[in-house]
Image (cartoon, rainbow, N blue to C red; front, top):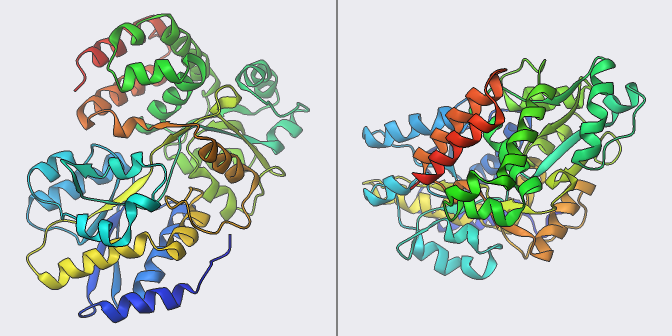
Length: 409
């Protein structure tokens, strides 16, 4: 990817409009190697404005970081900006009047005309007002495959879910873990949702997650998904890692054949010096249903009493949507820019697949934009129990899942 103009020049322009330079605390959960590399691009751009980035990274992922961030805001010790996912995670904070309204920034910068898909800006909108700045398009809909693992086992790299299943026993016999999966709850839920889209289909996925249709959740289409998840649960035995990037490293090093994980995994492959199509392969939708669930990350801003801080928050929000930051950050993160007008001259094979899906309109909303945090937590708890158990049947797990969907808000 090539920057179309000088990042320094653009951020210097922002600096010229800032009333004064400030120490500016940004909290986020980007702590893996690839993530830290990506977030440094934002920090460099912000520091170039004359302000000072104060890093508030919280290790452990979103499930760990979000309660800490919310507690600080409710406790009267807010940071200046914080990362959440697009969707309903900040809904209660907005309703309480604790988050800054960015509508004036969005209108001045023309976000409505620039952000693609529009659902990402919709996810930042509450009662007609805009409360967050989207930074990227992330999709869960990927399976990453290690060429080394399959070459070591003398097997061809799978091209779809069925060929992956067919190869699993031989891969295990060669001393490889077929499917790398970390121990955090969101990883199990994410992998399940990818299987749901690929195997039950987009219509069934949306019926469950968007329409809260418990009959579909408990029906034959989702029965296939739970049966596949039970098989995948066996494939994941032996992963014995906690963090998602540790599971990605198993694929990078050839210890595991595959991982179902969002496109942020590409940041880890890139940091390890690996090349798409040479060292690893990628299957959108498990090679079955090529679609992106367009979620991602956005920055929100707690309401502050100091007008200079408020001005800096709006300056930061505008900077996040600048073409230069969009390209630099997303190139390192493995995600896609939210702006459809940036110059992407050179992307790798997997990113190209994502861009082609986006251009073709093969996009659906991410689960984080459809389900409340409470419902998401209930599903996380169920998936954690199911994936860790060797006794919970697919049918029992499906019955509990359908009950959660029936009561979802």
